[in-house]
Length: 445
Image 1: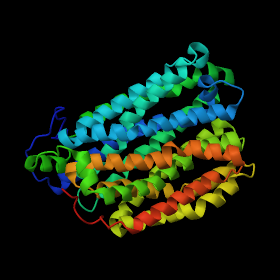
Image 2: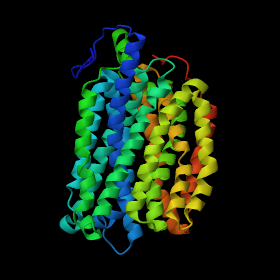
Image 3: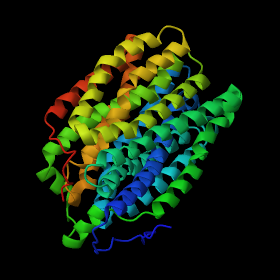
Image 4: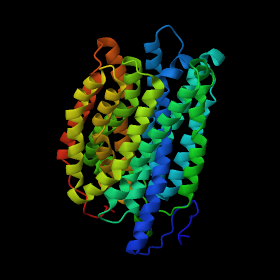
Protein backbone atom coordinates (compact mmCIF):
# COMPACT_ATOMS: atom_id res chain seq x y z
CA UNK A 1 0.00 0.00 0.00
CA UNK A 2 1.23 3.47 -0.75
CA UNK A 3 2.82 5.30 2.15
CA UNK A 4 0.79 8.37 1.14
CA UNK A 5 -2.92 7.92 1.76
CA UNK A 6 -5.77 10.36 2.12
CA UNK A 7 -5.21 13.73 3.64
CA UNK A 8 -7.94 15.52 5.62
CA UNK A 9 -10.13 17.89 3.71
CA UNK A 10 -8.52 21.16 4.82
CA UNK A 11 -5.66 23.38 3.78
CA UNK A 12 -2.56 21.35 2.97
CA UNK A 13 0.35 20.91 5.32
CA UNK A 14 3.18 23.34 4.88
CA UNK A 15 5.80 20.60 5.28
CA UNK A 16 7.92 20.25 2.16
CA UNK A 17 9.92 17.13 1.47
CA UNK A 18 11.55 16.87 -1.94
CA UNK A 19 10.29 13.61 -3.51
CA UNK A 20 12.60 11.09 -5.12
CA UNK A 21 12.26 10.32 -8.84
CA UNK A 22 10.24 7.17 -8.09
CA UNK A 23 8.03 9.02 -5.62
CA UNK A 24 7.47 11.84 -8.14
CA UNK A 25 6.34 9.40 -10.84
CA UNK A 26 4.04 7.60 -8.39
CA UNK A 27 2.47 10.90 -7.31
CA UNK A 28 1.98 11.87 -10.96
CA UNK A 29 0.36 8.54 -11.82
CA UNK A 30 -2.12 8.79 -8.95
CA UNK A 31 -2.92 12.39 -9.83
CA UNK A 32 -3.43 11.52 -13.51
CA UNK A 33 -5.81 8.67 -12.69
CA UNK A 34 -7.78 10.72 -10.17
CA UNK A 35 -8.09 13.61 -12.61
CA UNK A 36 -9.19 11.39 -15.48
CA UNK A 37 -12.00 9.78 -13.47
CA UNK A 38 -13.57 13.11 -12.49
CA UNK A 39 -13.20 14.56 -15.97
CA UNK A 40 -14.91 11.45 -17.32
CA UNK A 41 -17.92 12.20 -15.12
CA UNK A 42 -18.10 15.76 -16.45
CA UNK A 43 -17.97 14.74 -20.10
CA UNK A 44 -20.24 11.76 -19.55
CA UNK A 45 -22.92 14.18 -18.38
CA UNK A 46 -22.40 16.71 -21.16
CA UNK A 47 -22.19 13.86 -23.67
CA UNK A 48 -25.41 12.22 -22.50
CA UNK A 49 -27.28 15.51 -22.75
CA UNK A 50 -25.91 16.17 -26.23
CA UNK A 51 -26.51 12.65 -27.52
CA UNK A 52 -30.05 12.51 -26.09
CA UNK A 53 -30.95 16.03 -27.26
CA UNK A 54 -33.12 14.87 -30.13
CA UNK A 55 -34.96 12.45 -27.78
CA UNK A 56 -35.68 14.83 -24.91
CA UNK A 57 -36.40 17.91 -27.05
CA UNK A 58 -40.14 17.17 -27.58
CA UNK A 59 -40.50 16.04 -23.94
CA UNK A 60 -39.51 19.41 -22.50
CA UNK A 61 -40.35 21.67 -25.45
CA UNK A 62 -43.39 20.13 -27.17
CA UNK A 63 -44.70 21.65 -30.37
CA UNK A 64 -45.20 21.12 -34.07
CA UNK A 65 -41.72 22.30 -35.06
CA UNK A 66 -39.00 19.72 -34.21
CA UNK A 67 -36.24 22.13 -35.21
CA UNK A 68 -37.51 24.72 -32.74
CA UNK A 69 -37.64 22.08 -29.99
CA UNK A 70 -34.08 21.00 -30.78
CA UNK A 71 -32.89 24.61 -30.71
CA UNK A 72 -34.54 25.05 -27.31
CA UNK A 73 -32.74 21.99 -25.91
CA UNK A 74 -29.44 23.22 -27.35
CA UNK A 75 -30.03 26.64 -25.82
CA UNK A 76 -30.40 24.92 -22.44
CA UNK A 77 -27.20 23.01 -23.23
CA UNK A 78 -25.45 26.32 -23.79
CA UNK A 79 -26.78 27.80 -20.54
CA UNK A 80 -24.54 25.43 -18.57
CA UNK A 81 -21.52 26.91 -20.35
CA UNK A 82 -22.59 30.49 -19.64
CA UNK A 83 -22.52 29.86 -15.88
CA UNK A 84 -19.16 28.05 -16.01
CA UNK A 85 -16.99 31.18 -15.59
CA UNK A 86 -18.82 32.04 -12.36
CA UNK A 87 -18.32 28.53 -10.99
CA UNK A 88 -14.71 28.58 -12.16
CA UNK A 89 -13.98 31.88 -10.42
CA UNK A 90 -15.73 30.99 -7.14
CA UNK A 91 -14.31 27.47 -6.88
CA UNK A 92 -11.01 28.41 -8.51
CA UNK A 93 -10.50 31.06 -5.82
CA UNK A 94 -11.03 28.37 -3.19
CA UNK A 95 -8.60 26.11 -5.03
CA UNK A 96 -5.94 28.81 -4.94
CA UNK A 97 -6.51 29.38 -1.22
CA UNK A 98 -7.12 25.96 0.36
CA UNK A 99 -5.75 23.59 -2.27
CA UNK A 100 -6.82 21.71 -5.38
CA UNK A 101 -7.89 18.38 -3.91
CA UNK A 102 -10.83 19.51 -1.77
CA UNK A 103 -12.32 21.54 -4.60
CA UNK A 104 -12.00 18.63 -7.04
CA UNK A 105 -13.96 16.39 -4.68
CA UNK A 106 -16.66 19.06 -4.49
CA UNK A 107 -16.94 19.50 -8.25
CA UNK A 108 -17.38 15.82 -9.07
CA UNK A 109 -20.06 15.37 -6.38
CA UNK A 110 -21.93 18.49 -7.51
CA UNK A 111 -21.93 17.50 -11.18
CA UNK A 112 -22.98 13.92 -10.46
CA UNK A 113 -25.92 14.85 -8.24
CA UNK A 114 -27.17 17.40 -10.77
CA UNK A 115 -26.90 14.86 -13.60
CA UNK A 116 -28.96 12.29 -11.71
CA UNK A 117 -31.58 14.96 -10.94
CA UNK A 118 -32.15 15.51 -14.66
CA UNK A 119 -33.20 11.85 -14.88
CA UNK A 120 -35.80 12.49 -12.16
CA UNK A 121 -37.34 15.57 -13.79
CA UNK A 122 -41.00 15.64 -14.82
CA UNK A 123 -41.68 16.28 -18.50
CA UNK A 124 -43.78 19.10 -19.92
CA UNK A 125 -46.74 16.73 -20.20
CA UNK A 126 -46.50 16.12 -16.45
CA UNK A 127 -45.54 19.53 -15.09
CA UNK A 128 -46.13 22.05 -17.87
CA UNK A 129 -43.85 25.08 -17.95
CA UNK A 130 -42.20 23.96 -14.69
CA UNK A 131 -40.42 21.14 -16.54
CA UNK A 132 -38.18 23.27 -18.80
CA UNK A 133 -37.60 25.74 -15.94
CA UNK A 134 -36.28 22.94 -13.72
CA UNK A 135 -34.17 21.64 -16.60
CA UNK A 136 -32.52 25.04 -17.01
CA UNK A 137 -31.89 25.40 -13.27
CA UNK A 138 -30.23 22.00 -12.99
CA UNK A 139 -28.12 22.65 -16.07
CA UNK A 140 -26.96 25.88 -14.43
CA UNK A 141 -25.92 23.90 -11.35
CA UNK A 142 -24.03 21.45 -13.54
CA UNK A 143 -22.30 24.28 -15.35
CA UNK A 144 -21.32 25.93 -12.07
CA UNK A 145 -19.45 22.85 -10.85
CA UNK A 146 -18.13 21.96 -14.30
CA UNK A 147 -16.52 25.39 -14.45
CA UNK A 148 -13.88 24.20 -11.99
CA UNK A 149 -13.63 20.50 -12.85
CA UNK A 150 -11.42 19.93 -15.87
CA UNK A 151 -9.51 23.13 -15.12
CA UNK A 152 -8.70 21.95 -11.61
CA UNK A 153 -7.89 18.47 -12.88
CA UNK A 154 -5.42 19.86 -15.41
CA UNK A 155 -3.74 22.06 -12.79
CA UNK A 156 -3.66 19.15 -10.35
CA UNK A 157 -1.82 16.87 -12.78
CA UNK A 158 0.58 19.57 -13.98
CA UNK A 159 1.53 20.40 -10.40
CA UNK A 160 1.98 16.72 -9.56
CA UNK A 161 4.16 15.83 -12.57
CA UNK A 162 7.98 15.97 -12.79
CA UNK A 163 9.63 18.37 -15.24
CA UNK A 164 9.82 16.93 -18.74
CA UNK A 165 6.81 14.63 -18.17
CA UNK A 166 3.94 17.08 -17.80
CA UNK A 167 2.78 16.46 -21.35
CA UNK A 168 2.56 12.70 -20.88
CA UNK A 169 0.83 12.71 -17.50
CA UNK A 170 -1.27 15.74 -18.43
CA UNK A 171 -2.68 13.81 -21.39
CA UNK A 172 -4.66 11.60 -19.02
CA UNK A 173 -6.98 14.47 -18.10
CA UNK A 174 -8.39 14.59 -21.67
CA UNK A 175 -8.30 10.78 -21.73
CA UNK A 176 -11.09 11.20 -19.18
CA UNK A 177 -12.81 13.56 -21.63
CA UNK A 178 -12.72 10.94 -24.39
CA UNK A 179 -13.67 8.00 -22.17
CA UNK A 180 -16.50 9.97 -20.57
CA UNK A 181 -17.85 10.79 -24.01
CA UNK A 182 -17.38 7.18 -25.13
CA UNK A 183 -19.23 5.89 -22.07
CA UNK A 184 -22.05 8.34 -22.73
CA UNK A 185 -22.31 7.22 -26.36
CA UNK A 186 -22.20 3.54 -25.34
CA UNK A 187 -24.92 3.94 -22.73
CA UNK A 188 -27.09 5.91 -25.16
CA UNK A 189 -26.45 3.31 -27.87
CA UNK A 190 -27.47 0.42 -25.63
CA UNK A 191 -30.51 2.28 -24.32
CA UNK A 192 -31.82 3.29 -27.74
CA UNK A 193 -30.99 -0.14 -29.21
CA UNK A 194 -32.82 -2.18 -26.56
CA UNK A 195 -35.89 0.00 -26.12
CA UNK A 196 -38.67 0.88 -28.48
CA UNK A 197 -39.28 4.50 -29.44
CA UNK A 198 -42.29 4.57 -27.09
CA UNK A 199 -40.31 3.15 -24.16
CA UNK A 200 -37.50 5.59 -24.83
CA UNK A 201 -39.86 8.56 -24.78
CA UNK A 202 -41.77 7.27 -21.76
CA UNK A 203 -38.98 6.37 -19.32
CA UNK A 204 -35.88 5.05 -21.12
CA UNK A 205 -34.29 8.48 -21.66
CA UNK A 206 -33.81 8.74 -17.88
CA UNK A 207 -31.47 5.73 -17.63
CA UNK A 208 -28.28 7.39 -18.95
CA UNK A 209 -28.67 10.26 -16.48
CA UNK A 210 -29.16 7.95 -13.48
CA UNK A 211 -26.05 5.97 -14.41
CA UNK A 212 -23.91 8.98 -13.49
CA UNK A 213 -24.30 7.97 -9.82
CA UNK A 214 -21.94 4.94 -9.81
CA UNK A 215 -19.40 6.91 -11.84
CA UNK A 216 -19.43 9.69 -9.23
CA UNK A 217 -18.99 7.24 -6.35
CA UNK A 218 -16.00 5.63 -8.07
CA UNK A 219 -14.39 8.99 -8.81
CA UNK A 220 -14.86 10.20 -5.22
CA UNK A 221 -13.16 7.10 -3.84
CA UNK A 222 -10.18 7.65 -6.13
CA UNK A 223 -9.88 11.38 -5.46
CA UNK A 224 -10.20 10.93 -1.72
CA UNK A 225 -7.02 8.85 -1.69
CA UNK A 226 -4.64 11.30 -3.37
CA UNK A 227 -2.51 13.94 -1.72
CA UNK A 228 -2.37 17.65 -2.41
CA UNK A 229 -0.02 18.64 -5.23
CA UNK A 230 3.70 19.12 -4.38
CA UNK A 231 3.71 22.49 -6.16
CA UNK A 232 0.84 23.87 -4.09
CA UNK A 233 2.32 22.54 -0.85
CA UNK A 234 5.64 24.17 -1.69
CA UNK A 235 3.86 27.44 -2.45
CA UNK A 236 1.73 27.30 0.72
CA UNK A 237 4.82 26.69 2.86
CA UNK A 238 6.41 29.98 1.76
CA UNK A 239 3.67 32.40 0.71
CA UNK A 240 0.19 33.46 1.66
CA UNK A 241 -2.57 32.73 -0.87
CA UNK A 242 -3.70 35.72 -2.95
CA UNK A 243 -6.35 37.86 -1.33
CA UNK A 244 -7.95 38.81 -4.67
CA UNK A 245 -6.87 36.24 -7.29
CA UNK A 246 -9.27 37.47 -9.99
CA UNK A 247 -7.93 41.01 -9.75
CA UNK A 248 -4.37 39.70 -9.80
CA UNK A 249 -5.07 37.57 -12.88
CA UNK A 250 -6.65 40.39 -14.85
CA UNK A 251 -4.06 42.94 -13.78
CA UNK A 252 -0.86 40.93 -14.23
CA UNK A 253 -1.68 38.07 -16.60
CA UNK A 254 -4.24 39.41 -19.07
CA UNK A 255 -2.15 38.69 -22.24
CA UNK A 256 -1.74 35.05 -21.20
CA UNK A 257 -5.48 34.83 -20.44
CA UNK A 258 -6.38 36.12 -23.90
CA UNK A 259 -4.00 33.69 -25.60
CA UNK A 260 -5.49 30.75 -23.73
CA UNK A 261 -9.06 31.92 -24.48
CA UNK A 262 -8.37 31.80 -28.23
CA UNK A 263 -6.56 28.45 -28.01
CA UNK A 264 -9.41 26.88 -26.07
CA UNK A 265 -11.91 28.36 -28.53
CA UNK A 266 -10.42 26.15 -31.27
CA UNK A 267 -10.02 23.20 -28.93
CA UNK A 268 -13.65 23.28 -27.79
CA UNK A 269 -15.03 23.81 -31.28
CA UNK A 270 -13.15 20.69 -32.36
CA UNK A 271 -14.60 18.58 -29.57
CA UNK A 272 -18.18 19.81 -29.38
CA UNK A 273 -18.69 19.98 -33.14
CA UNK A 274 -16.40 17.08 -34.00
CA UNK A 275 -18.05 14.58 -31.67
CA UNK A 276 -21.17 15.82 -29.88
CA UNK A 277 -22.77 17.89 -32.66
CA UNK A 278 -21.85 15.24 -35.24
CA UNK A 279 -24.42 13.01 -33.55
CA UNK A 280 -27.11 15.54 -34.49
CA UNK A 281 -25.57 16.01 -37.94
CA UNK A 282 -25.51 12.28 -38.73
CA UNK A 283 -28.94 11.43 -37.27
CA UNK A 284 -31.11 14.52 -37.82
CA UNK A 285 -29.66 15.86 -41.07
CA UNK A 286 -28.19 12.78 -42.78
CA UNK A 287 -30.79 10.31 -41.48
CA UNK A 288 -28.55 7.58 -40.02
CA UNK A 289 -29.95 5.36 -37.27
CA UNK A 290 -29.36 6.77 -33.77
CA UNK A 291 -28.18 3.59 -32.06
CA UNK A 292 -25.61 2.90 -34.80
CA UNK A 293 -24.28 6.46 -34.71
CA UNK A 294 -23.82 6.20 -30.94
CA UNK A 295 -21.63 3.12 -31.43
CA UNK A 296 -19.60 4.90 -34.10
CA UNK A 297 -18.98 7.82 -31.74
CA UNK A 298 -18.11 5.48 -28.87
CA UNK A 299 -15.52 3.60 -30.95
CA UNK A 300 -13.97 6.81 -32.26
CA UNK A 301 -13.80 8.26 -28.73
CA UNK A 302 -11.96 5.20 -27.42
CA UNK A 303 -9.52 5.37 -30.34
CA UNK A 304 -8.90 9.05 -29.62
CA UNK A 305 -8.27 8.29 -25.93
CA UNK A 306 -5.64 5.69 -26.87
CA UNK A 307 -3.72 8.26 -28.91
CA UNK A 308 -3.61 10.99 -26.26
CA UNK A 309 -0.73 9.76 -24.06
CA UNK A 310 1.36 9.27 -27.20
CA UNK A 311 0.85 12.85 -28.31
CA UNK A 312 1.27 14.19 -24.78
CA UNK A 313 4.57 12.37 -24.44
CA UNK A 314 5.68 13.55 -27.87
CA UNK A 315 5.00 17.16 -26.88
CA UNK A 316 7.50 16.72 -24.04
CA UNK A 317 10.11 16.01 -26.72
CA UNK A 318 9.22 18.28 -29.66
CA UNK A 319 7.52 21.05 -27.69
CA UNK A 320 3.93 22.12 -27.11
CA UNK A 321 3.83 24.66 -29.95
CA UNK A 322 4.80 22.20 -32.69
CA UNK A 323 2.37 19.56 -31.46
CA UNK A 324 -0.54 21.99 -31.17
CA UNK A 325 0.24 23.45 -34.61
CA UNK A 326 -0.08 19.96 -36.13
CA UNK A 327 -3.51 19.59 -34.52
CA UNK A 328 -4.95 22.94 -35.52
CA UNK A 329 -3.63 22.67 -39.09
CA UNK A 330 -5.22 19.23 -39.22
CA UNK A 331 -8.64 20.62 -38.34
CA UNK A 332 -8.29 23.38 -40.92
CA UNK A 333 -7.42 20.95 -43.71
CA UNK A 334 -9.50 17.88 -42.89
CA UNK A 335 -12.89 18.81 -41.52
CA UNK A 336 -14.68 20.22 -44.58
CA UNK A 337 -13.74 17.50 -47.10
CA UNK A 338 -14.54 14.82 -44.49
CA UNK A 339 -17.99 16.31 -43.85
CA UNK A 340 -18.64 16.24 -47.59
CA UNK A 341 -17.62 12.58 -47.61
CA UNK A 342 -20.03 11.77 -44.77
CA UNK A 343 -22.98 12.83 -46.91
CA UNK A 344 -22.94 9.88 -49.31
CA UNK A 345 -25.52 7.53 -47.78
CA UNK A 346 -23.12 4.93 -46.36
CA UNK A 347 -22.68 4.75 -42.59
CA UNK A 348 -19.35 2.94 -42.98
CA UNK A 349 -17.91 5.71 -45.14
CA UNK A 350 -19.41 8.34 -42.84
CA UNK A 351 -17.78 6.63 -39.84
CA UNK A 352 -14.40 6.53 -41.61
CA UNK A 353 -14.70 10.19 -42.58
CA UNK A 354 -15.62 11.15 -39.03
CA UNK A 355 -12.61 9.23 -37.70
CA UNK A 356 -10.27 11.09 -40.05
CA UNK A 357 -11.87 14.45 -39.21
CA UNK A 358 -11.34 13.87 -35.49
CA UNK A 359 -7.67 12.84 -35.74
CA UNK A 360 -6.53 16.31 -34.63
CA UNK A 361 -8.64 16.07 -31.49
CA UNK A 362 -6.32 13.83 -29.40
CA UNK A 363 -3.39 16.11 -30.26
CA UNK A 364 -5.06 19.34 -29.16
CA UNK A 365 -6.82 17.82 -26.15
CA UNK A 366 -3.76 16.05 -24.77
CA UNK A 367 -1.26 18.87 -25.36
CA UNK A 368 -3.58 21.77 -24.63
CA UNK A 369 -4.27 21.26 -20.93
CA UNK A 370 -0.66 21.00 -19.73
CA UNK A 371 0.14 23.99 -21.96
CA UNK A 372 -2.53 26.10 -20.30
CA UNK A 373 -1.31 25.16 -16.82
CA UNK A 374 2.21 26.23 -17.79
CA UNK A 375 1.10 29.77 -18.65
CA UNK A 376 0.32 30.84 -15.08
CA UNK A 377 2.07 30.79 -11.67
CA UNK A 378 0.94 28.45 -8.90
CA UNK A 379 -0.48 31.23 -6.70
CA UNK A 380 -3.27 32.05 -9.19
CA UNK A 381 -3.13 29.07 -11.57
CA UNK A 382 -6.57 27.64 -10.76
CA UNK A 383 -8.33 31.02 -11.05
CA UNK A 384 -6.50 32.06 -14.22
CA UNK A 385 -7.19 28.75 -15.95
CA UNK A 386 -10.83 28.88 -14.86
CA UNK A 387 -11.34 32.32 -16.40
CA UNK A 388 -9.54 31.68 -19.69
CA UNK A 389 -10.59 28.08 -20.38
CA UNK A 390 -14.25 28.69 -19.51
CA UNK A 391 -14.47 31.73 -21.77
CA UNK A 392 -13.00 29.67 -24.60
CA UNK A 393 -15.47 26.89 -23.81
CA UNK A 394 -18.41 29.29 -24.15
CA UNK A 395 -17.21 30.47 -27.56
CA UNK A 396 -16.23 27.06 -28.91
CA UNK A 397 -18.63 24.76 -27.10
CA UNK A 398 -21.56 26.29 -25.26
CA UNK A 399 -23.13 28.39 -27.99
CA UNK A 400 -21.67 26.54 -30.98
CA UNK A 401 -24.25 23.72 -31.38
CA UNK A 402 -27.06 26.28 -31.20
CA UNK A 403 -25.40 28.65 -33.68
CA UNK A 404 -24.58 26.04 -36.32
CA UNK A 405 -28.03 24.42 -35.99
CA UNK A 406 -29.73 27.81 -36.42
CA UNK A 407 -27.57 28.69 -39.46
CA UNK A 408 -28.25 25.30 -41.06
CA UNK A 409 -31.97 25.90 -40.51
CA UNK A 410 -31.74 29.30 -42.22
CA UNK A 411 -29.41 28.42 -45.08
CA UNK A 412 -29.73 24.67 -45.56
CA UNK A 413 -25.91 24.48 -45.85
CA UNK A 414 -24.81 21.33 -44.01
CA UNK A 415 -21.14 22.33 -44.15
CA UNK A 416 -21.63 25.21 -41.70
CA UNK A 417 -20.16 23.19 -38.77
CA UNK A 418 -17.06 22.45 -40.82
CA UNK A 419 -16.50 26.11 -41.69
CA UNK A 420 -16.94 27.03 -38.02
CA UNK A 421 -14.39 24.43 -36.90
CA UNK A 422 -11.86 25.46 -39.54
CA UNK A 423 -12.27 29.14 -38.67
CA UNK A 424 -11.82 28.45 -34.95
CA UNK A 425 -8.68 26.42 -35.69
CA UNK A 426 -7.22 29.28 -37.72
CA UNK A 427 -7.84 31.70 -34.83
CA UNK A 428 -6.05 29.29 -32.49
CA UNK A 429 -3.09 29.04 -34.86
CA UNK A 430 -2.70 32.83 -34.73
CA UNK A 431 -2.74 32.75 -30.93
CA UNK A 432 -0.24 29.87 -30.94
CA UNK A 433 2.26 32.03 -32.81
CA UNK A 434 2.41 34.35 -29.78
CA UNK A 435 2.91 31.53 -27.27
CA UNK A 436 6.29 30.84 -25.67
CA UNK A 437 7.53 27.25 -25.53
CA UNK A 438 7.06 25.80 -22.02
CA UNK A 439 7.63 22.05 -22.37
CA UNK A 440 11.12 21.86 -20.87
CA UNK A 441 11.04 24.30 -17.97
CA UNK A 442 9.62 24.22 -14.46
CA UNK A 443 6.18 25.51 -13.56
CA UNK A 444 5.95 29.13 -12.51
CA UNK A 445 5.49 29.72 -8.79
